Image (tube, rainbow, N blue to C red; front, side, top):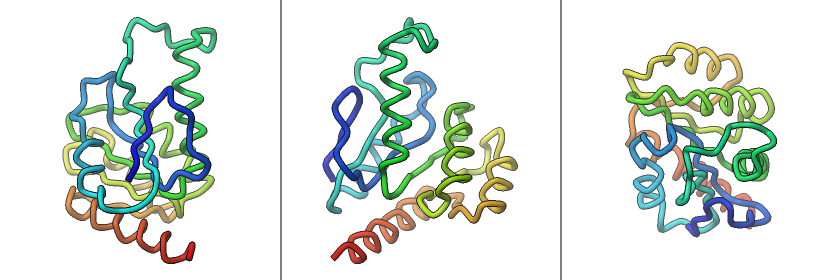
Length: 159
């Protein structure tokens, strides 16, 4: 997989968007582990974990760099064929909860969610997943396996 991060331009039809716990850089860099596990697959992956994130940016619509980040993420979620969503148990991940609601309601078939035991709002995630028919797993190995199957199925369908 070829990895893209903000503020780089988005590719036309990315294969995978990596949504999940970042917590302004405080969460485990799970995105690196996932891209390594899926590195042999074809396609583009979007990782919103910005290398030069500045926590001093005001989180307001009139803050150009913050708005650029959020717009990049929203466009990536919409364009991607598969959305991998990871809720780290040590994280609150409020933006990920927001993204779960957005994608589950509009395109639940795109989502593969991993919500391990210990995540503070696991019940909410489980209820949303059940209501909208979202693929939900609770362990890392099941997450990578489900994503591999989904991405391979996507590749087989495009030929």
